[in-house]
Length: 319
Image (cartoon, rainbow, N blue to C red; front, side, top):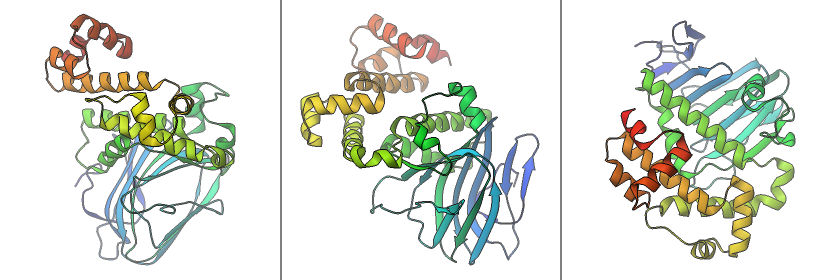
């Protein structure tokens, strides 16, 4: 087993680093290991670290470590009964307020200064999570100093904010648990999903102070988004969509625009183009991809495609 290819292994001990891959993986195969399962630590780029864990604890344990400043985006895919985690004395909401069959819990935490991380796990407890760790320098380099990409209240020290993962992203993010994506293409795919996770988290993040008045709005927006995603081929009118989510059409237009920075029509259009690009890159003809996106005119499709992605459909097909 290589340092990057960790399948069903015993976990524990001290992290080791692979100089070539810059991947840190905590591995131990002895009989007194603390957990069993899969863990991935991948530095996708400077300031952007991916941690995926799907593991079961084999004994009662307590782990404490001082962690450095940064911004963390979490997705917990299952209830984490028997596990308590805190950062700087503040408990993390891992698996709370979540019913069976719902999408993963999403939340963020900002650390402006070093803080103590404490995890207490009972024997038999299980964790299945994705965590992205972003350095504060990465934020400045990516969005510019003093950017509004991160709401000020969500960027305060130890601030915990909820975000609302779509079904589409939840499915994509679950692929980050796979242990067979260690090629150059696989690493690129990991980074693409991670950046989409950052984008979606920042676009739907709601700090605690804003949750009271906007919680219902976000529930409406997320339900509308999921209905749109499930009916891209058939299409659904704004009036029908508003009826499905239980609000007026004007209200739906307003809250959707506030949440995503675009109209419902633009969101539908862009999602169809994204689907068309996937079809083209997987080998389908440009004409069939255009039809799937709702275009009967190939020239109009090519123009819209280039405006959206900066390349022509032919360029996308060539790779």
